[in-house]
Image (cartoon, rainbow, N blue to C red):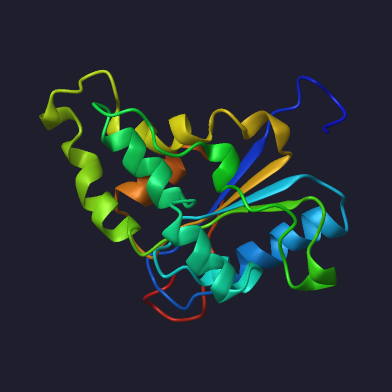
Length: 189
């Protein structure tokens, strides 16, 4: 997929504490351009429980089906939080392939969909160590979930929620770069 074996996957977090600053719109545009125009293999991970990036790239019906089946980032993170039980979901089955409304899907653009269930999971991530699991760092849950597929992508785009909660902190922890869209007001800058 990538031209050089030693070339690392670029993980870019699109972040801002303010909603409405353009995080999702910018993340989607960058992901689609990288996949369509630059012919890069891109995984967009929707970390925002509002699921705006998800329902922009796939239909609401498709998202509803994936959410019902547990094929979202929420289920992958939940599996890692419930370390006493075997994982119920494999990342391979959670990734939606060839997504976008452009050209009925872009061949090199994949999506790890979001879910409103991320709200509950974000509150449970810090409790991992308190539950007796001292081998799992709460800020490496996302890294561990994505590890099996990271090497096949040139870029992983993380659309973060407008907060600095533990889901966003997990995204920032694995990022190799950040994009902070801002509008010209005091709150978003």
